[in-house]
Length: 280
Ligand SMILES: Nc1ncnc2c1ncn2[C@@H]1O[C@H](COP(=O)(O)OP(=O)(O)OP(=O)(O)O)[C@@H](O)[C@H]1O
Image (cartoon, rainbow, N blue to C red; front, side, top):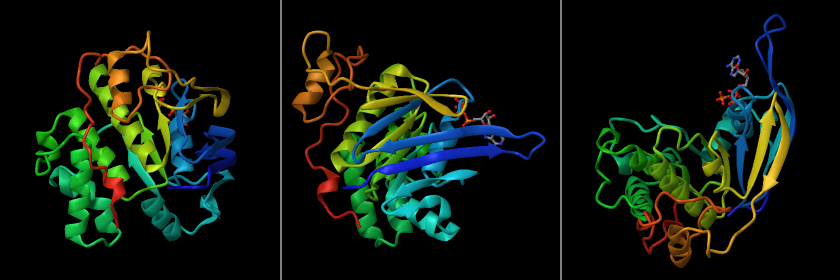
């Protein structure tokens, strides 16, 4: 559980040199509260992925700061920043992020193994996450033997297995159909929230953004608008799937989005939450 915000101040990022420079971020301020989920939207080229990478310490800004748990990521030495990224952040990308030669349980266990967790503990924790995300029985399948949605759930397990304070996701449903994308966002937001982690999602898709508590809109390297979701009671206008989710201890999208899974069972409904045990 995290108790401090992720705070970006005055972020500027310029790619290239003076001759052919592109200003991807033109002075971005953003505070992500503990446990908050934020969608970053905007036209192509507006700076969304650059912002995500700078917030996550993957990319250094040209100027500005990113404060996390009392440290400024932008001034940390490379090694310390890599360490902090591994211990405090989780990542979910569009696709192709799993190692093709490793089975699901080893893929999802990687952050723990890299952190030095004994292998049996790491694999056990990973398997509990996979089961929680609806993948019981698929632990030994390699990514090529999983559907796109199943592979994304392995990626979600891998992002959360180390109990991060923030999960960063870049177009996590971009390679999926609408139905599967809905299931993946439900799994991602529910599991992240249950762990008390914050979530930052880059997306072009309004339906994906609806799962988040806040949406910020970017244009030309700046945040130009933002909107907070209105929590809705699962009643008329909200789908049967949303009501089922509430009954199972999860919630539907933060605002009422028609669900393609209205008559489907929840993909995530297993009783034992992996975050209740020691992950490392
Ligand atoms: N490595 C790079 N070198 C040079 N320019 C870059 C680089 N990465 C991004 N840019 C430029 O920076 C700007 C912002 O790119 P970014 O990828 O952050 O936008 P985006 O909003 O995520 O776009 P998209 O929705 O198309 O993924 C764009 O003009 C892009 O061409």
